[in-house]
Image (cartoon, rainbow, N blue to C red; front, top):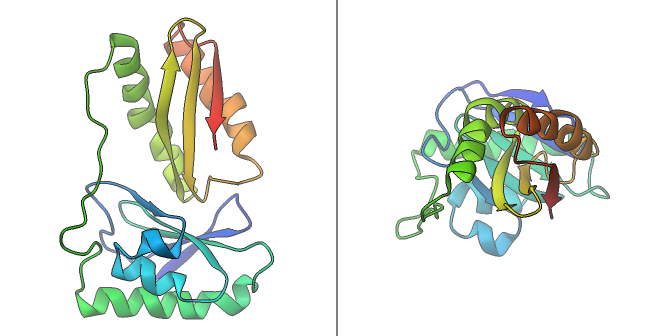
Length: 185
């Protein structure tokens, strides 16, 4: 098994591409060792020194390191080993009985349009950088759209610029009801 790595705009996050599906049904994020108990792979990654976050995309694993932790030169080999061991073992990504939560409920026409634009144009671009962007809330009175950045994009120095220069411009162009975009932390 050959696993490629890619840098992300976030210097504290690295993207690992195992050459197979990772989480094709729904992206998953783990920010603590307690949350990671739902996933054998996430749990094993959190046991490595300096791992601060794990994110599973459709075909990649994004690992965020602690800013004051070991350098990537020290962390990369153990992370590659854990990922390879997991996929070779055939273990499930998520333990049996652990549900993957999905957003439920009826959306207004504007919210459906926003989510469609996020899914078709924005999320694929953000995924290339090892992260994800999720709809949080749209205030129809003020036009403020709140989005949540995950994976390598959470805490990335350029995420604010991405939201304002890229996402906000696109949203305002295609959905005129959106007046501004804000990040939910």
